[in-house]
Amino acid sequence: IVLLSVVGLTLAQDTIPTITVPFIGFGNDILYASIVAVAAQATTIEIACDPLSDCGLFPKETVIYGPSTYNIDMSDPNTDFTATADCSFGSPYIVCKETAGGSEANFPGSSTSSYDADHLTSLPVSVTAGAEKLLGGQLSAATGIESSQAAVSTS
Image (tube, rainbow, N blue to C red; front, side, top):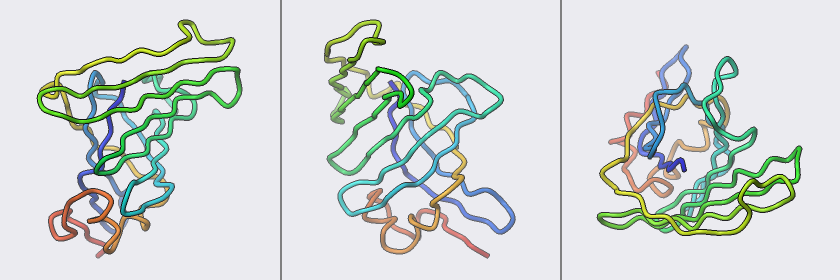
């Protein structure tokens, strides 16, 4: 399970913007994100592996994250497979209800898993589209951090 939280955005002229993303159980793979939508309640991001690597993500993986929301949709639009994880953050554990279905699911059904919050790591993720949606007051509302702390720079 990949746990994702947007905690910072860095923009610099002539560079690809990056966000710092906490993950659990994930290596040092190169990841990309497209910011789909930003609202006070949640931010929607589509994430993908580097095209030259197989980092284990599904072909389309959507994450919806906010102060009280965390959902990963790992459904494959090209097959009969659906999978989601709905998580809540607590101390000292992160609890996720995971479901899988469709004729191509190896283990259909649902389960609840707990992850030790101490196992979160952070990786830089390159934003390939939608970075402008994180700018302004929306960044603070969606991530719980102040714009001045997010190191946002466009010059």
